[in-house]
Image (cartoon, rainbow, N blue to C red; front, side, top):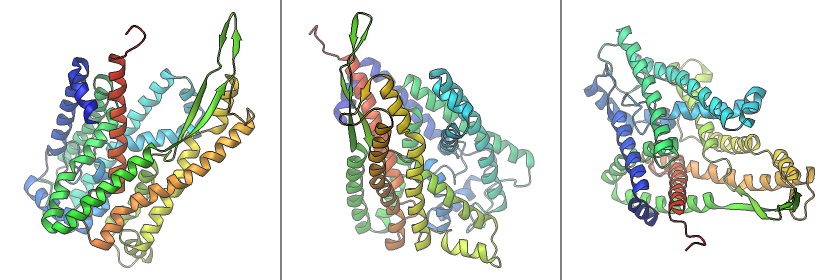
Length: 434
């Protein structure tokens, strides 16, 4: 990885792209610490420090993670990349359900551009809803239940509240624009790099807190983190390659085909999406208990005792089972064995030993089901690490080497390095002329 970046900086064109990407990241982090107008900065700082070490930090875990700690600071970029992620997931699901969107997906680049535009519109709508919800929680004092300070300077000023909602929504729009700038003029993978930046941003403070609290725990966390990174790299790179042979075809007076290739099926075919799905669902009961704090309703009481915190056996089991379920669900809607088998048959491709058409689709479905099982267990176990660490060792709520954080860091890091290496190969290609 270090060699790739060193060679990239020696190439003028790539050096400009890398420096441009670093500049966008710096601007992005500036917006994450810039407070929204109308926020009482001093009181917010006191409440934020208490929330980081208290139980209330678990309520906003996933959103706080994808905002790089900016959510509870009520900054301009407080919502982070989460509205865009949610909108993208919803559009991916709707493509399978709505025929019109499925037809757009098959139109190629033009159809994908329209789906991207729909994703942007949905992102703005979700940003308005989320910013309104969090400002309402801050206005009523429920954003920091254990803090008695007013985090807003004038909670009764409706114009000020609307202004904060507009600014946070505009911040989400700017984040989308910055991600597209990195994709077009930087090293690519714009949104993924911004997610990577937000996740990594909380590491220094969390590691510092653990080091100051207990040096032995800090050493254990670092050792566990290294082993987790190595394990995630190993599994993320693991894949089953299905060999595909293309028969020779005569088109006019020229012969085509006769080549061999393969279909790469990753062990973790679903990526981080199932973890986001499961965390989003378990975020709802936590939000409900924070909005309706009632000790008389038996349902709310049971939810607050079993699903509002991550250290209960029911929460852990539910989280694990939801991840396994969503892994199978997401793989089933994103990988269509029948469509791949039809495309292979159309272009004269076949798997050695398997007849084209339906037998090929059944074989691909069989292999994919066998691969998804260890992938789902891997996602569930990796994601349980911060919850188990919290329950057993009493570690920080934002356990720095949590499964979600590691998955994002390793996945985006590997993809970015591959993109840089591919661009280096394009600019330093040694062919027959040399």
